Length: 139
Image (cartoon, rainbow, N blue to C red; front, side, top):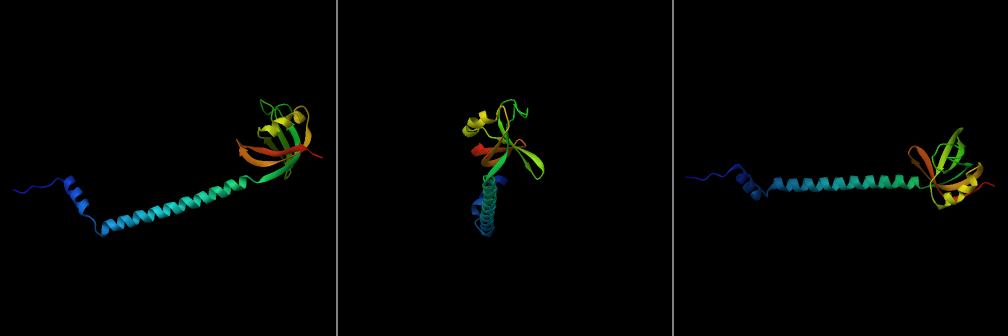
């Protein structure tokens, strides 16, 4: 009487003995896929870093400084904005809340004044937001 192995036992035995060219091909393929995936990840990371670096360029804007709540009636709370004309179209920059912007707000809350601001611009909720590093009345 001969004892036959079940299908699972036979597969396990075959896998233990399978050290031939097929296993080497699988290992080579796994290494190749890992290398290509790593390269693709590095390329995507470098593109993302380049894009983020471009967003951090400082710009200087001169225009009418106003309060978004008191003058424009577009906000529930006081917030500084600067309106300029770019390419014949009015552009509104909302100043991000920071110490410099908050300290300057008394100059703009009740009346419009010409201001010059330097900082970085990013798009937030479809609006241009300027994080100021320098803010002063225009001369």
